[in-house]
Length: 332
Image (tube, rainbow, N blue to C red; front, side, top):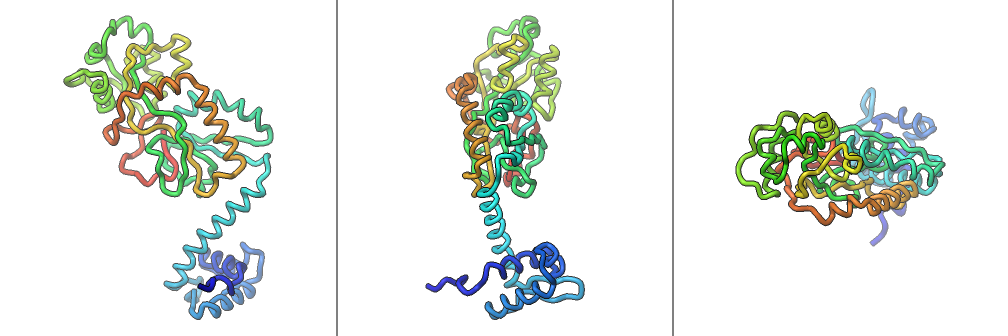
């Protein structure tokens, strides 16, 4: 079968894509550094080769025809992939690596380690973002993201970084005051966090019946809930991985070993087609090595007691709307 693109110059497709996206021959000409007449000529030549009109010429703009609209979607996707490929091939080490991640994970785990990555990559500046909204990485200008979930998001490739586990954490004084000897002792304890998450932990710990009294505090970010626990306000359900430093330093204690998981884990993600980007590959390899060398991650991998899917809000920073399953990036 003959190649339908054989007789169509790439330059014509590039001009057509700009005109369809901008809905203007004049603006396309400005973007491409051409004259408006040259753009018009390229479009007419393309229409002649295809044997059909691609635009409706209106007084103040142009609108793609039905056929033009179909070609426009494909052309925009193709040009985006080409731009990414060319960018990946030509990018220099001094470029910026833009990361969007979860607030608690960034504060408690990633930021304290980033110095070693920057020492190993002195020509690569890092921009770290903790926007709690779901993002389209490519559209928002981010190279990679670190998020919690299933690991499957449209338009993204992902690699699991670490499991997501939660367990009760509190100050030593609170543990002493509550005399926590067995999981059931937390039923009447002042608890911090969502009731349905605590109910899942009680089930994992083999505690039957309801959890009373109700929790006294919930927050959008896990780090805020743990801050309340550090202030002797109650017992928080939090990640022993992300708060390992506080546990090591004796600021927090983990009274019971039982854990619960609300999603598959934490993943590093990047836009499809950018796996071989040098800066993404360097960061991904470094990040995976950091997780592999973290003893708390290894412990969590072997101690996941239960995975509760869709029964509790995602937790590790902000809790996104569970109905928003069309993640293009992810959330804390």
